[in-house]
Each structure stands twice: as C-alpha cells, then as structure tokens.
Image 1: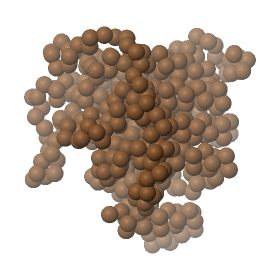
Image 2 (image 1 turned 60 degrees about the horizontal axis):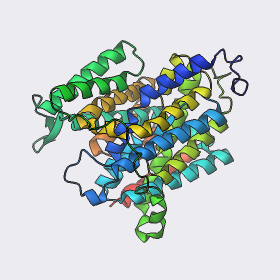
Image 3 (image 1 turned 180 degrees about the vertical axis):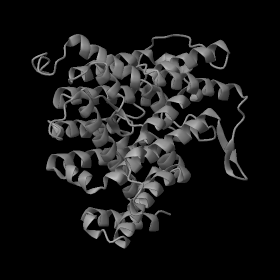
Length: 442
C-alpha cells in the first residue's frame, strides 16, 4: 500500500496518514447531522411530512456517498481529499428547489444525477477545465462568498437569532430563549476553538453544545448509542422516478441542473487547488492527476444522487487533515472507513438539533466568505457583478438567482468599460441562458 501511494516520495507514513484522515473526518463529521437535517427540512415546522425526505435514509446516503467518494478520490486521484454532500448545494436543494419552488425532492435528485452525468462527460472530454477557465476568477470567488453568506443566514435563522419581521422582513429574535442561548453558546465555543486552531473544532463544538443542552434539559438524552443501520430504500433510486414525469422537463429544471453543475464546478476546482497547494502537490502551477481527481468528484456526485443525497463534492475541511500530516490518498481511505463506521451510531443523531448545527453552518459560512479578499474591488466593472452575485443569494434566498444576476451584469459592465476582449465567448452564452432563466422563471 505504501508503494502505491508513494509514501517515501511524499515524505509520509501510515501514522501521519491515519492521523490526517482522522482529523479530516472530525473536521467534516458535522455533515452527517447537518445534511439529513437540511434535506429533510427539519427546521420547517409547517412543511408536510409526506413531502420531506426521510431523515434516516438521507443519513445513510450521506455516509455512503462520503465514503464512496473519498475511496474513489483516494485510490484514483491519490489526493488527501475527502468528499461529502456539499454545504450550500444542500441548502439550495432543500430551501430553494424543494421548499421555495415546490419541486418534489425526487425531481431535485434527478437534477443532481443529470448534473453528475454531465459533469463526468465534460471531464472525460476535457471540456470541464475549459468551462471553468472561461468563468472570470472574480465571479468564482463571489459565488463562494455568496454561498457562505447564504449558509450563515440559514444558520442564524435555525438558531433563532434572526427571525421574521413583518415591518422589516427580518429582525433580531428572542436572545433569552433557551434554544437560542444554546446556539449562541455553541457559536462562542466553536469560534474560540477555531481561533485557537484546534483540529475538528466544528465537530467538537457540536459535541460540547449537545452536552450542555442535555445538562440544561434542552436536549433529550438518547436511549441507545449503537443500533441497526436505517433503511436506504426511501431515497435509493428515487432520482430515476422523476424521468417518467412530464413536469420534470421544464425551463426551471434546466436552470436548477445548471446551478448544481456550475456551483460544483467552482467548489471542487477551488478546493482541489487549495488543498493541493497546502500539501505541496502543486507543481509549476499545475495539478498532477487533475483529470483523475475531477473524475472522482463526478463519480461521487452521480452515485450520491442514486443513493439519495444532494451533490457530493470535495471538502475544504480536508486542509485540516493536510495540516495534521496527510499527503496521499491513503488518508482519504481512512476518512472513508470512519464514515462507514458512523452508520452504526445513528441513534446519537437524535441529540443533534437545529440549535446544535446552527454554529456549524455559521462557521462554514465564515470560511467560505474568506474568498472576498481575492476579488478586485478596485475595478467597478468587476465589483458590480461580484457584489450582486454575493448579495443576491441570501436576499433572494436562492443561490441560482445570485449566479444568474452576476453572470448577466458581468458582460454588461465589461462591454461598457471597453474590456470586450477579456470576455470569454462562453460568458455570452451564460448571459443568454440566465436572461431566459428570469424570463421563464415563473
């Protein structure tokens, strides 16, 4: 095994890879809780149960998709990069597509499956890299920051810190409420650990918040720790059922598929470059085995949709594992094994409520918004589409809307500024697509 992963060449060993893989798992284990809560719309009390995704099935799908994606990345890409259903994309899936647009979750899974297949085809033909390169780097960073703001907004809502206000749309909630105080405590303790550079701070923050919640009787103690694995049948293969429904073939679904496709483009490419740089894998500004890594991500998205979860993508939390010593794909195999073991600890998830996961959403949002510093705000023609991309996401409660607005304004401001030569032809295609998206949105 150490020969396959070239331990000596990469200056690593089994111990470092195991610790790195464990650290990555601890840093991203929150997704096992947050993803089922998000996709099942657990925080929405008046939503019909018949239209919700099954919590247990989504938990199993999340664990299996994360494990399988990480295994493929480890064996094929040989990168110390773990995969799981992406934050932001799961929020888009649940809050924008299912809740906001009233589209059945089966259709949403079908859209993810199609985006995964397109992703794979684009990667195999080499078009994926060309499309990514066609999108201005400033807009890529704006998309990441916008998703970060959107996730943070959802976290603040789940915590009860931000609530509905008929006069001002939103307002400050009751900060003396028990669950809100619990969420605030979780935010504070997680921020402290993150600031101190503690690996797995988000995960440990959730654990500490759960313990405090149990002590103050805000969370019920689970009856058992280990149990049989929940059934995957409620979600497994449900994506295929959408293809026989004529209501699936609409312009709005096309926009949803493109959104899944575009956001996964940006997220995966940025994460891959960031982790490769940190691990010292990048050579002459090029990624070795980049094609294999991108194929791994495509396979993970496709398989994840069949299992029953939103887009599976590379996780920036893998950087925590790299910081702990991970340098090869063996660390990804360790992370995958831990995701599989987590399947048997399903009963423990009953203690993880919305106030417990809210801090994780907010902290992940903070990490994603860091891309704002990479945008050239001194150029007004860049600042306008970047800002509109970013701000439209939380205000419209839609990632798709943010991307559409930014991609429409970019060619307009660049043409007016006289920088037409810098506009890639693909951006004009995006312009037409998103103008049509707004025209036929209703």
